[in-house]
Amino acid sequence: MKPKKIRIIAHGGAGSENEHSDGTKKAVETCYKEVQKSTSLIHAVSLAVCVLEDDGRYNAGSGSHARANGKIEHDAAIMDSEGCFGAVAAMKGFKNPIQAAKAVSKTKYRILAGEGAAKFAQDLKLEPTHLQNISGGGKDFSTSPTTDTVGCVAFDGTSFVAALSTGGMAGAHYGRVGDVPIIGSGLYAGPDGAVATTGDGEAIMMKITAYRAYELIQKGVSPQSIVDEVINWFPTDAFGLILLSHKGSAGGSNRSMAWSSREFG
Image 1 (cartoon, helix red, strand yellow):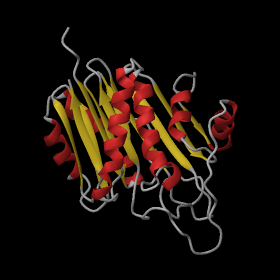
Image 2: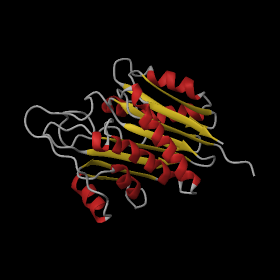
Image 3: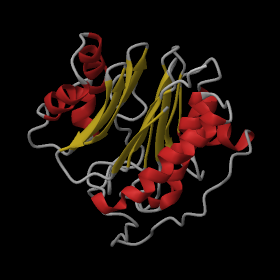
Image 4: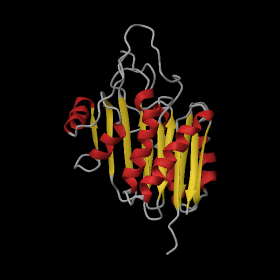
């Protein structure tokens, strides 16, 4: 039997250092190894995002920006082409928010936020974070304040999956929620492909970016042409994206962006 073709892309966020692509490469390799174990694709992609959350050089998980009150809140989301979607928003206290988002996707809910999301994660015994809240006027961000959301998209020959995780906007009002947990804004996956974006969350939301990029996939536009067109929707705002379709894969950003892509089989 001919082995099925597997495509995986991971990004470290618009504004992340290009030389930090060793971390996104590790995320891609982690996803592939999990798929080889016959793990579900949605689980494999969530583990790839865990790698990015644990890295510390990207604005997610241990590298997350603090809010204006010195506290750290996380947004994360995951979606597959079978219509499974789950997200958490403004959640505090857990090492890998993407795992909470994946767990939400298995419930009757689609998004859990704030204290409710944290209680849900606690009940699942997800690992707490060791991040310290930042106090005082000056904030010591563990990553550049211009670094944005991390993400991963994958295709295993049958299903597409997209996932995102972020610490949000540096210095934002607590409780602020960006594009990440809003379906069709930061990410979208369907039978024809998967899209994961990064950048200015408010601008991405207002343009319903991921779903509109997916519509271009449905029209048969080539992946690189879609990347070029969608980046042009953001002439001044930080923006990047990665995507997969049956035609192939592509990624790009109008800022520096660590990202890795690999095709297996």
